[in-house]
Image 1 (tube, rainbow over the protein chains, first blue to last red):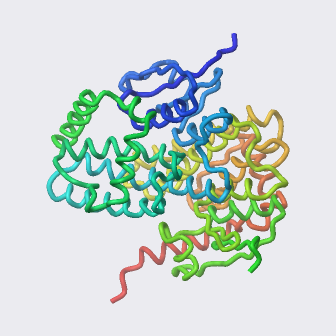
Image 2: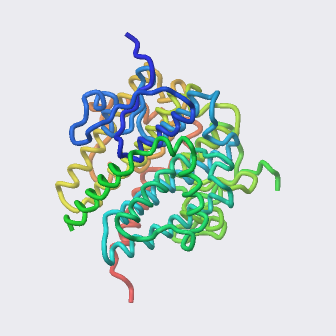
Length: 223
Length: 229
Protein backbone atom coordinates (compact mmCIF):
# COMPACT_ATOMS: atom_id res chain seq x y z
CA UNK A 1 0.00 0.00 0.00
CA UNK A 2 1.55 3.31 -1.06
CA UNK A 3 2.08 5.65 1.84
CA UNK A 4 0.73 9.15 1.19
CA UNK A 5 1.25 12.46 2.90
CA UNK A 6 4.01 14.16 4.82
CA UNK A 7 5.51 13.00 8.11
CA UNK A 8 8.22 14.80 10.01
CA UNK A 9 10.23 12.92 12.61
CA UNK A 10 11.66 15.47 15.01
CA UNK A 11 11.95 16.65 18.56
CA UNK A 12 9.84 19.45 20.03
CA UNK A 13 13.01 21.01 21.53
CA UNK A 14 15.20 20.67 18.45
CA UNK A 15 16.11 23.73 16.39
CA UNK A 16 16.92 21.41 13.46
CA UNK A 17 13.44 19.90 13.13
CA UNK A 18 11.94 23.35 13.75
CA UNK A 19 13.62 24.76 10.66
CA UNK A 20 11.96 22.04 8.56
CA UNK A 21 8.62 22.94 10.17
CA UNK A 22 9.13 26.58 9.18
CA UNK A 23 9.72 25.54 5.57
CA UNK A 24 6.61 23.33 5.53
CA UNK A 25 4.46 26.02 7.14
CA UNK A 26 5.68 28.66 4.68
CA UNK A 27 4.57 26.35 1.88
CA UNK A 28 1.28 25.65 3.73
CA UNK A 29 1.93 21.93 3.60
CA UNK A 30 0.02 19.71 6.02
CA UNK A 31 2.24 17.32 7.90
CA UNK A 32 2.18 14.93 10.83
CA UNK A 33 4.82 15.67 13.47
CA UNK A 34 6.27 12.56 15.11
CA UNK A 35 7.91 13.69 18.33
CA UNK A 36 10.83 11.38 19.07
CA UNK A 37 12.37 10.37 22.38
CA UNK A 38 16.05 10.53 21.45
CA UNK A 39 16.96 8.16 24.28
CA UNK A 40 14.54 5.62 22.85
CA UNK A 41 14.27 6.17 19.09
CA UNK A 42 11.26 4.70 17.32
CA UNK A 43 11.53 1.75 14.95
CA UNK A 44 10.04 3.95 12.26
CA UNK A 45 12.81 6.56 12.59
CA UNK A 46 15.52 3.91 12.50
CA UNK A 47 13.85 2.33 9.47
CA UNK A 48 13.68 5.65 7.60
CA UNK A 49 17.16 6.83 8.56
CA UNK A 50 19.41 3.82 9.17
CA UNK A 51 22.45 5.86 8.02
CA UNK A 52 22.74 8.55 10.69
CA UNK A 53 19.71 7.58 12.83
CA UNK A 54 19.13 11.28 13.53
CA UNK A 55 16.20 13.65 13.40
CA UNK A 56 14.84 15.43 11.53
CA UNK A 57 13.65 13.00 8.90
CA UNK A 58 10.99 14.00 6.39
CA UNK A 59 8.93 11.23 4.82
CA UNK A 60 7.06 12.39 1.73
CA UNK A 61 4.73 9.80 0.24
CA UNK A 62 6.80 7.09 1.89
CA UNK A 63 10.15 8.43 0.67
CA UNK A 64 12.52 9.49 3.47
CA UNK A 65 15.03 12.33 3.58
CA UNK A 66 17.50 13.28 6.29
CA UNK A 67 19.75 16.32 6.92
CA UNK A 68 17.73 19.41 7.79
CA UNK A 69 19.35 21.85 5.35
CA UNK A 70 18.88 19.33 2.53
CA UNK A 71 15.24 18.84 3.57
CA UNK A 72 14.57 22.60 3.51
CA UNK A 73 15.84 22.84 -0.09
CA UNK A 74 13.76 19.79 -0.98
CA UNK A 75 10.60 21.37 0.47
CA UNK A 76 11.22 24.41 -1.74
CA UNK A 77 11.58 22.24 -4.85
CA UNK A 78 8.85 19.70 -4.11
CA UNK A 79 6.23 22.45 -3.64
CA UNK A 80 7.37 24.94 -6.26
CA UNK A 81 4.11 26.89 -6.47
CA UNK A 82 4.18 28.51 -3.10
CA UNK A 83 6.40 30.67 -0.98
CA UNK A 84 9.85 30.99 -2.53
CA UNK A 85 12.56 29.84 -0.14
CA UNK A 86 15.70 29.66 -2.33
CA UNK A 87 16.85 32.64 -4.44
CA UNK A 88 16.24 32.25 -8.18
CA UNK A 89 19.63 33.34 -9.43
CA UNK A 90 22.34 30.61 -9.35
CA UNK A 91 24.96 32.96 -7.88
CA UNK A 92 22.57 34.13 -5.14
CA UNK A 93 21.73 30.48 -4.44
CA UNK A 94 25.42 29.65 -4.11
CA UNK A 95 25.83 32.55 -1.66
CA UNK A 96 22.84 31.38 0.42
CA UNK A 97 24.19 27.82 0.53
CA UNK A 98 27.69 29.08 1.41
CA UNK A 99 26.47 31.13 4.37
CA UNK A 100 24.15 28.34 5.49
CA UNK A 101 27.17 26.03 5.56
CA UNK A 102 29.08 28.66 7.56
CA UNK A 103 26.18 29.03 9.98
CA UNK A 104 26.13 25.25 10.52
CA UNK A 105 29.90 24.71 10.71
CA UNK A 106 30.80 27.75 12.82
CA UNK A 107 27.75 29.26 14.53
CA UNK A 108 26.21 26.01 15.81
CA UNK A 109 29.34 24.88 17.73
CA UNK A 110 30.07 28.45 18.86
CA UNK A 111 26.63 28.90 20.41
CA UNK A 112 26.79 25.37 21.83
CA UNK A 113 30.06 26.26 23.59
CA UNK A 114 28.41 29.31 25.11
CA UNK A 115 25.54 27.16 26.39
CA UNK A 116 27.72 24.62 28.18
CA UNK A 117 30.46 26.76 29.72
CA UNK A 118 31.00 29.06 32.70
CA UNK A 119 33.71 31.35 34.06
CA UNK A 120 36.75 31.98 31.88
CA UNK A 121 35.73 29.35 29.33
CA UNK A 122 32.37 31.11 28.95
CA UNK A 123 34.06 34.49 28.37
CA UNK A 124 36.20 32.90 25.66
CA UNK A 125 33.15 31.17 24.13
CA UNK A 126 31.18 34.45 24.04
CA UNK A 127 34.02 36.22 22.25
CA UNK A 128 34.29 33.41 19.66
CA UNK A 129 30.51 33.41 19.12
CA UNK A 130 30.54 37.16 18.59
CA UNK A 131 33.32 36.82 16.02
CA UNK A 132 31.49 34.23 13.91
CA UNK A 133 28.25 36.21 14.16
CA UNK A 134 30.10 39.34 13.05
CA UNK A 135 31.21 37.39 9.96
CA UNK A 136 27.68 36.08 9.31
CA UNK A 137 26.38 39.65 9.57
CA UNK A 138 28.16 40.35 6.25
CA UNK A 139 25.54 38.24 4.48
CA UNK A 140 22.80 40.61 5.70
CA UNK A 141 24.26 43.44 3.60
CA UNK A 142 21.97 45.98 5.25
CA UNK A 143 18.82 44.05 4.34
CA UNK A 144 15.96 43.31 6.74
CA UNK A 145 16.44 39.56 6.28
CA UNK A 146 19.14 37.44 4.65
CA UNK A 147 16.50 36.71 2.00
CA UNK A 148 15.74 40.41 1.42
CA UNK A 149 12.33 41.80 2.32
CA UNK A 150 11.05 38.36 3.32
CA UNK A 151 12.73 35.36 4.94
CA UNK A 152 14.56 32.88 2.74
CA UNK A 153 16.78 29.83 3.01
CA UNK A 154 19.53 31.38 5.10
CA UNK A 155 17.03 32.97 7.50
CA UNK A 156 15.43 29.55 7.99
CA UNK A 157 18.79 27.82 8.53
CA UNK A 158 20.15 30.47 10.92
CA UNK A 159 16.78 31.35 12.46
CA UNK A 160 17.17 29.05 15.46
CA UNK A 161 19.67 31.55 16.87
CA UNK A 162 17.32 34.46 17.66
CA UNK A 163 15.30 32.10 19.84
CA UNK A 164 17.94 29.82 21.30
CA UNK A 165 20.72 32.36 21.82
CA UNK A 166 18.45 34.86 23.58
CA UNK A 167 17.26 32.00 25.77
CA UNK A 168 20.85 30.98 26.62
CA UNK A 169 21.69 34.62 27.37
CA UNK A 170 18.84 34.73 29.87
CA UNK A 171 19.67 31.37 31.45
CA UNK A 172 23.40 32.07 31.77
CA UNK A 173 22.89 35.79 32.54
CA UNK A 174 25.18 36.96 29.76
CA UNK A 175 25.02 39.14 26.65
CA UNK A 176 26.23 37.89 23.31
CA UNK A 177 24.14 39.85 20.82
CA UNK A 178 22.62 43.26 21.52
CA UNK A 179 22.27 46.66 19.87
CA UNK A 180 25.76 47.63 21.03
CA UNK A 181 27.78 44.51 20.30
CA UNK A 182 26.21 43.39 17.01
CA UNK A 183 23.55 45.92 15.93
CA UNK A 184 22.76 44.39 12.51
CA UNK A 185 22.52 40.86 13.91
CA UNK A 186 20.43 42.16 16.81
CA UNK A 187 18.01 43.85 14.41
CA UNK A 188 17.75 40.64 12.37
CA UNK A 189 17.02 38.69 15.59
CA UNK A 190 14.14 41.09 16.34
CA UNK A 191 12.80 41.02 12.78
CA UNK A 192 12.98 37.24 12.52
CA UNK A 193 11.07 36.67 15.77
CA UNK A 194 8.28 38.91 14.44
CA UNK A 195 7.69 36.75 11.37
CA UNK A 196 4.22 35.19 11.64
CA UNK A 197 5.19 31.60 10.82
CA UNK A 198 8.03 31.79 13.38
CA UNK A 199 5.90 33.35 16.14
CA UNK A 200 3.23 30.69 15.94
CA UNK A 201 5.56 27.70 15.82
CA UNK A 202 8.15 28.34 18.53
CA UNK A 203 8.13 25.65 21.23
CA UNK A 204 6.36 26.63 24.49
CA UNK A 205 8.70 29.10 26.20
CA UNK A 206 8.61 27.77 29.77
CA UNK A 207 9.06 24.16 28.66
CA UNK A 208 11.99 25.06 26.35
CA UNK A 209 13.67 27.19 29.00
CA UNK A 210 13.37 24.42 31.59
CA UNK A 211 14.77 21.91 29.09
CA UNK A 212 17.78 24.08 28.24
CA UNK A 213 18.35 25.15 31.84
CA UNK A 214 18.53 21.48 32.83
CA UNK A 215 20.84 20.72 29.91
CA UNK A 216 23.22 23.54 30.86
CA UNK A 217 23.29 22.37 34.45
CA UNK A 218 24.03 18.84 33.32
CA UNK A 219 27.03 20.02 31.31
CA UNK A 220 28.30 22.33 34.04
CA UNK A 221 28.10 19.65 36.70
CA UNK A 222 29.96 17.28 34.43
CA UNK A 223 32.98 19.61 34.37
CA UNK B 1 37.45 40.85 -19.01
CA UNK B 2 34.61 38.86 -20.54
CA UNK B 3 31.53 38.58 -18.33
CA UNK B 4 31.67 34.81 -18.69
CA UNK B 5 35.39 34.54 -17.88
CA UNK B 6 35.97 31.41 -15.76
CA UNK B 7 38.89 30.87 -13.40
CA UNK B 8 39.45 28.21 -10.76
CA UNK B 9 41.87 28.70 -7.88
CA UNK B 10 43.14 25.34 -6.68
CA UNK B 11 45.95 22.84 -6.23
CA UNK B 12 46.72 19.50 -7.89
CA UNK B 13 46.54 17.34 -4.77
CA UNK B 14 43.21 18.57 -3.42
CA UNK B 15 40.19 16.27 -3.80
CA UNK B 16 37.96 19.30 -3.27
CA UNK B 17 39.53 21.13 -6.21
CA UNK B 18 38.98 18.07 -8.42
CA UNK B 19 35.24 18.38 -8.00
CA UNK B 20 34.62 21.68 -9.83
CA UNK B 21 37.23 20.64 -12.44
CA UNK B 22 35.25 17.50 -13.23
CA UNK B 23 32.02 19.52 -13.30
CA UNK B 24 33.47 22.11 -15.68
CA UNK B 25 34.84 19.33 -17.89
CA UNK B 26 31.44 17.62 -17.98
CA UNK B 27 29.84 20.89 -19.08
CA UNK B 28 32.57 21.53 -21.64
CA UNK B 29 33.41 24.88 -20.04
CA UNK B 30 36.87 26.30 -20.64
CA UNK B 31 38.57 27.77 -17.61
CA UNK B 32 41.89 29.08 -16.42
CA UNK B 33 43.40 26.99 -13.61
CA UNK B 34 45.29 29.12 -11.10
CA UNK B 35 47.48 26.78 -9.09
CA UNK B 36 48.26 27.85 -5.55
CA UNK B 37 51.82 27.31 -4.33
CA UNK B 38 51.96 24.89 -1.41
CA UNK B 39 52.65 26.68 1.86
CA UNK B 40 51.39 30.11 0.83
CA UNK B 41 48.09 31.69 -0.15
CA UNK B 42 47.82 34.13 -3.03
CA UNK B 43 46.32 37.62 -2.73
CA UNK B 44 43.58 36.56 -5.12
CA UNK B 45 42.63 33.59 -2.92
CA UNK B 46 42.56 35.68 0.26
CA UNK B 47 40.47 38.32 -1.49
CA UNK B 48 38.08 35.80 -3.08
CA UNK B 49 37.53 33.64 -0.01
CA UNK B 50 38.11 35.90 3.00
CA UNK B 51 35.92 33.73 5.25
CA UNK B 52 37.77 30.41 4.93
CA UNK B 53 40.84 31.36 2.82
CA UNK B 54 40.61 27.89 1.25
CA UNK B 55 40.64 26.36 -2.21
CA UNK B 56 38.78 25.72 -4.44
CA UNK B 57 37.33 29.08 -5.45
CA UNK B 58 35.51 29.48 -8.75
CA UNK B 59 35.61 32.96 -10.26
CA UNK B 60 32.85 33.46 -12.81
CA UNK B 61 32.99 36.88 -14.40
CA UNK B 62 35.04 37.89 -11.38
CA UNK B 63 32.39 36.76 -8.87
CA UNK B 64 33.69 34.21 -6.35
CA UNK B 65 31.91 30.99 -5.41
CA UNK B 66 33.41 28.91 -2.59
CA UNK B 67 32.98 25.42 -1.07
CA UNK B 68 33.49 22.57 -3.52
CA UNK B 69 30.02 20.98 -3.57
CA UNK B 70 28.38 24.40 -3.64
CA UNK B 71 30.57 25.23 -6.64
CA UNK B 72 29.53 21.97 -8.34
CA UNK B 73 25.85 22.85 -7.85
CA UNK B 74 26.51 26.35 -9.15
CA UNK B 75 28.24 24.97 -12.26
CA UNK B 76 25.28 22.65 -12.83
CA UNK B 77 22.83 25.55 -12.59
CA UNK B 78 24.83 28.21 -14.46
CA UNK B 79 25.63 26.12 -17.55
CA UNK B 80 23.35 23.92 -19.62
CA UNK B 81 24.42 20.61 -21.09
CA UNK B 82 25.27 17.53 -19.05
CA UNK B 83 23.08 17.39 -15.94
CA UNK B 84 25.10 16.77 -12.80
CA UNK B 85 22.25 16.68 -10.30
CA UNK B 86 19.17 14.57 -11.01
CA UNK B 87 16.13 16.39 -12.38
CA UNK B 88 13.72 14.95 -9.82
CA UNK B 89 13.61 16.93 -6.51
CA UNK B 90 13.65 13.80 -4.33
CA UNK B 91 16.67 12.27 -6.06
CA UNK B 92 18.37 15.68 -5.97
CA UNK B 93 17.86 15.79 -2.21
CA UNK B 94 19.17 12.23 -1.83
CA UNK B 95 22.28 13.20 -3.82
CA UNK B 96 22.82 16.26 -1.61
CA UNK B 97 22.38 14.11 1.49
CA UNK B 98 25.15 11.76 0.33
CA UNK B 99 27.38 14.76 -0.43
CA UNK B 100 26.97 15.85 3.20
CA UNK B 101 27.52 12.31 4.48
CA UNK B 102 30.71 11.85 2.45
CA UNK B 103 32.17 15.18 3.58
CA UNK B 104 30.91 15.36 7.16
CA UNK B 105 31.04 11.71 8.23
CA UNK B 106 32.92 9.42 5.87
CA UNK B 107 35.97 11.47 4.89
CA UNK B 108 36.69 12.66 8.48
CA UNK B 109 36.61 8.98 9.52
CA UNK B 110 39.18 8.19 6.78
CA UNK B 111 41.53 11.00 7.79
CA UNK B 112 40.84 10.18 11.43
CA UNK B 113 42.45 6.76 11.10
CA UNK B 114 46.00 8.08 11.01
CA UNK B 115 45.22 10.70 13.65
CA UNK B 116 43.49 8.31 16.08
CA UNK B 117 45.06 8.65 19.55
CA UNK B 118 44.32 5.07 20.64
CA UNK B 119 44.04 1.66 18.98
CA UNK B 120 40.39 1.60 19.99
CA UNK B 121 39.72 4.94 18.26
CA UNK B 122 41.63 3.74 15.20
CA UNK B 123 39.54 0.55 15.03
CA UNK B 124 36.35 2.62 15.30
CA UNK B 125 37.42 4.98 12.51
CA UNK B 126 38.29 2.06 10.23
CA UNK B 127 34.90 0.47 10.95
CA UNK B 128 33.16 3.74 10.08
CA UNK B 129 35.01 3.94 6.76
CA UNK B 130 33.95 0.40 5.84
CA UNK B 131 30.38 1.01 7.05
CA UNK B 132 30.18 4.13 4.87
CA UNK B 133 31.47 2.25 1.83
CA UNK B 134 28.88 -0.45 2.45
CA UNK B 135 26.09 2.17 2.52
CA UNK B 136 27.40 3.67 -0.70
CA UNK B 137 27.61 0.22 -2.31
CA UNK B 138 23.90 -0.20 -1.51
CA UNK B 139 23.10 3.22 -3.00
CA UNK B 140 24.97 2.29 -6.17
CA UNK B 141 23.14 -1.01 -6.33
CA UNK B 142 19.69 0.58 -5.88
CA UNK B 143 20.08 3.69 -8.02
CA UNK B 144 22.46 2.14 -10.51
CA UNK B 145 20.29 -0.83 -11.54
CA UNK B 146 23.25 -2.23 -13.44
CA UNK B 147 24.43 1.21 -14.54
CA UNK B 148 28.11 2.13 -14.14
CA UNK B 149 27.70 5.34 -12.13
CA UNK B 150 25.65 6.72 -9.22
CA UNK B 151 24.31 9.14 -11.82
CA UNK B 152 23.27 6.25 -14.09
CA UNK B 153 24.91 6.10 -17.50
CA UNK B 154 26.84 9.27 -16.80
CA UNK B 155 28.73 10.85 -13.92
CA UNK B 156 26.56 12.70 -11.41
CA UNK B 157 26.85 14.54 -8.13
CA UNK B 158 27.49 11.55 -5.85
CA UNK B 159 30.08 10.20 -8.31
CA UNK B 160 31.92 13.51 -8.10
CA UNK B 161 31.59 13.81 -4.30
CA UNK B 162 32.95 10.32 -3.65
CA UNK B 163 35.18 9.88 -6.68
CA UNK B 164 37.23 12.95 -5.87
CA UNK B 165 38.48 11.10 -2.78
CA UNK B 166 39.73 8.07 -4.76
CA UNK B 167 43.24 9.47 -5.13
CA UNK B 168 43.75 9.85 -1.39
CA UNK B 169 41.90 6.61 -0.68
CA UNK B 170 44.38 4.72 -2.85
CA UNK B 171 47.31 6.62 -1.34
CA UNK B 172 46.06 5.73 2.15
CA UNK B 173 45.80 2.08 1.10
CA UNK B 174 49.42 2.17 -0.04
CA UNK B 175 50.64 3.90 3.11
CA UNK B 176 48.66 1.76 5.56
CA UNK B 177 48.63 -1.61 3.79
CA UNK B 178 44.85 -1.81 4.35
CA UNK B 179 42.52 -2.32 1.38
CA UNK B 180 39.40 -0.16 1.63
CA UNK B 181 37.96 -0.78 -1.82
CA UNK B 182 37.73 -4.52 -1.47
CA UNK B 183 36.13 -6.60 -4.23
CA UNK B 184 34.87 -9.14 -1.69
CA UNK B 185 33.09 -6.43 0.32
CA UNK B 186 32.04 -3.76 -2.20
CA UNK B 187 32.39 -5.21 -5.71
CA UNK B 188 30.22 -2.56 -7.38
CA UNK B 189 32.32 0.25 -5.91
CA UNK B 190 35.55 -1.38 -7.09
CA UNK B 191 34.18 -1.52 -10.63
CA UNK B 192 32.79 2.00 -10.32
CA UNK B 193 36.14 3.37 -9.11
CA UNK B 194 37.89 2.12 -12.24
CA UNK B 195 35.25 3.47 -14.60
CA UNK B 196 35.15 6.82 -12.80
CA UNK B 197 38.92 7.25 -12.87
CA UNK B 198 39.02 6.39 -16.58
CA UNK B 199 36.28 8.85 -17.54
CA UNK B 200 37.52 11.56 -19.87
CA UNK B 201 36.24 14.33 -17.58
CA UNK B 202 38.17 12.82 -14.66
CA UNK B 203 41.40 11.20 -15.80
CA UNK B 204 43.14 14.47 -16.65
CA UNK B 205 42.51 15.88 -13.17
CA UNK B 206 42.90 12.75 -11.01
CA UNK B 207 46.26 13.01 -9.21
CA UNK B 208 48.57 10.01 -9.50
CA UNK B 209 48.54 7.82 -6.40
CA UNK B 210 52.35 7.66 -6.19
CA UNK B 211 52.62 11.45 -6.29
CA UNK B 212 50.06 11.69 -3.47
CA UNK B 213 52.01 9.13 -1.41
CA UNK B 214 55.17 11.20 -1.96
CA UNK B 215 53.28 14.36 -0.98
CA UNK B 216 51.90 12.72 2.18
CA UNK B 217 55.37 11.55 3.18
CA UNK B 218 56.75 15.04 2.61
CA UNK B 219 53.98 16.53 4.78
CA UNK B 220 54.61 13.99 7.53
CA UNK B 221 58.35 14.73 7.51
CA UNK B 222 57.73 18.45 7.52
CA UNK B 223 55.31 18.41 10.45
CA UNK B 224 57.11 15.88 12.59
CA UNK B 225 60.54 17.48 12.13
CA UNK B 226 61.84 19.21 15.28
CA UNK B 227 61.23 22.99 15.15
CA UNK B 228 64.20 24.87 13.76
CA UNK B 229 65.76 27.41 16.09
